[in-house]
Image 1 (tube, each protein chain N blue to C red):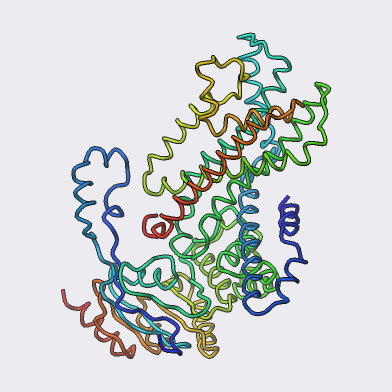
Image 2: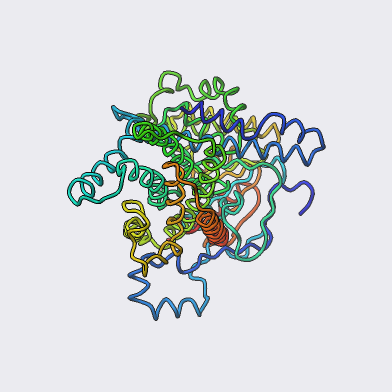
Length: 252
Length: 285
């Protein structure tokens, strides 16, 4: 791994074993015992989400990942976040990683917005002290001052996304993983997020950006890759990658 | 409530400790922030559970005492009034076994959901997953601690007093039961990710376990040829220890040692099972 790389994928393959796919009930295992034993002895992975993928994201770079549903984008993010383990190959990362959570993850609907900021912040690696110090800023950024002490279940989806981004924006990470969360906010807030991401970029925060919004991708990212069925089909400047993706989408 | 716990946790990792750790170089600074992270993580998870448990209820924390008491009342009517079991001070006898048992059974039953209920987190964030189990078991421990007050009130009614030996023995038994409960909870919560039948299975097994443990009846009521069940039961000797402590009977070192050995064995096994399967959690939830 070269010294200025933040994320390095070295011939990474990630396969999910068949137990993930087959039903997970004991009845099923017992009724179909022969099949399950056969599956065990075969040791043949049922599905590979990523297949021999290598790339490098340099420090301070904004790197976009696009692809159809099921092309392996989320698996790639999971590997970077360290929650998944590659079946083959190696994933190396350098620095503190902040995954921008999907809607509602790490939030509890019955707790107030304020309690959820603390919960979410600590889960993402902030200390309680730091969260309380930045609480006013986080709330101000989310523009949810008048709702913040209400239980989260009363929040709209857009409001939850705001809260999530506001916490992540104050994490001070080295690597920020953004997975399609901006889509739900209203236009004004999306604009604010994109501005914040531009700020991150000048602050040399590495960003990995998964999105279906090709316009955002072209606007923010320095480089991008197109995944298809677990393989890299195109990597390079975002305009070229987006053009290739559009071309493939147009084909039936 | 949450603040009290925070203070307790603060006490566990005292400021002085930090000072001595920081003093010696960058590697130690990492350790320091690591300790703060773990402390904050456990605090926020326990606080979340505490806040949630009785949210939107009128009686709030009264439930954590009321619930086991009502159970005790039902058993009292059943065994003392109807079946005329001849055990002296049966009400006290009952709750001294029932309350510790309920900590165990509540945690084990709830543990089915410790990982499963946090699937979105497990998929996204890297953090020590066993903290979810730790927080759940600690949460029930806090409620057990509250119910010890009820036991003390009952003791006073029966003209018994807490003795000095509690200072040592009470924390010791808490630790032993904590390890045992953690061990089983780790096994159950991990297995439930792979086999959802675990949830139904624990319901049945915990019920059977309850009746083979001398909670409702004294040890001497077990026929001699079934006395071995106490040795084979990790909760058996522990409940006997709890009861001796609360009833002011000297604790048998034999039962103490047995309870501790079982707890250690089960904790190590549970943690081992969790450890060996942890890396697959994110793909399976």
